[in-house]
Image (tube, rainbow, N blue to C red; front, side, top):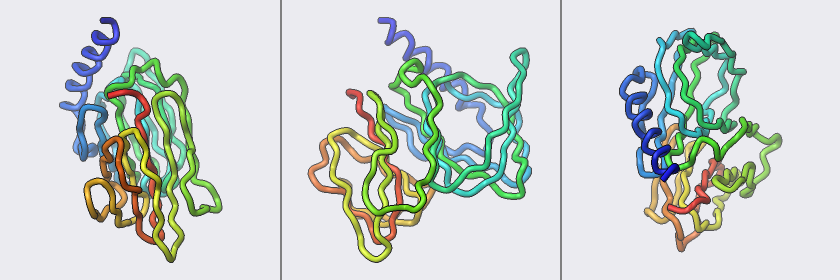
Length: 224
C-alpha cells in the first residue's frame, strides 16, 4: 500500500511539473516505465523558474557543452554549476523534486536527454553516479553501471563493420550518441542523437547496428 501511495503521489507531482515546463523540454517518449525529454539550452540562454518531478533520472549528454548554472527557488535558495559535458557521457541522479531556473554560461548550446523512471522509487537510487566516455573507445558492449534496478551498457561498433549486441531479457531504451542504423525487434530503423528506440523484453534476435555506431542501452532490471 505504501509503495502504491508513493507512486500515486509521484504521478501527481510529475503531471503538474510537466504542465509547467518551458519550451526547452520536448517529450519524445512516454510509456509506463519512463518519460524521455530532449532538452536544449541555447548559448547564454536563461530558462525561467520551473518544476521537475521527483523521479530518479538519467541524463545522457548529446554534445560537448560548457558550464550551466542552476539556481534553486527560496526558501532553500542555492546555486550549483553543472560542469562542461561531453558527447556520450551520462549522469544518474536519485529522485528529488526540484524548482529552479537555468542559465547557460557558455557560448555553446547544451543538448541532452532527460530519462525519468516512473516506476523506480526515489529511494532505490541513493547517490549521483557519473559515466564518462572511455578513451580510447574500444569496440564491443560493456556495462558501465549496474544495480538492482538499472544496467547501462555502452555499445561501440568498429568504424568499418557493423556489430551486434546480444538480446537481453529486460526491456530497454537505446540512446544513440552517433547517427546509426539498427535492426531489432521492431525491424529496421535509422536514428540520430537525440532520438531513442524502445526495445521490448525477451527479444529473440540480437540488436544489429551499423558500422561506427555508438549508443547507450539502458535496461530496466525490475519487474513490469
